[in-house]
Amino acid sequence: MFERELQDGRLARPLAIEVMTGDYWLTRLRSRPSSPSMKVFRDWLLGQTGAAS
Image (cartoon, rainbow, N blue to C red; front, top):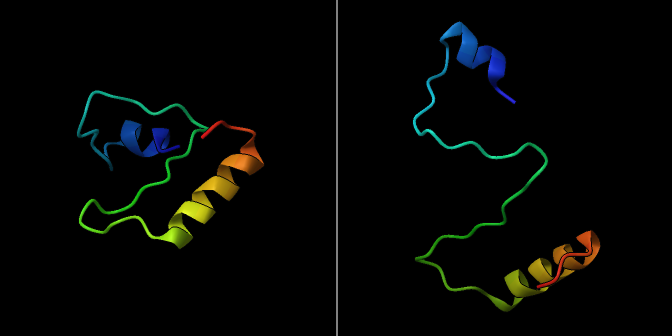
């Protein structure tokens, strides 16, 4: 996604890991408990992708 910026030196890779393009992460703050709405959204999103929960 940012290959050009990395090659031009405008961005620096802080870690030696890479995330495959096309994958997405659903995240939340650890300091905030998961709400019922968050669970409903997560379950809906997983259902849309065909992923198992």
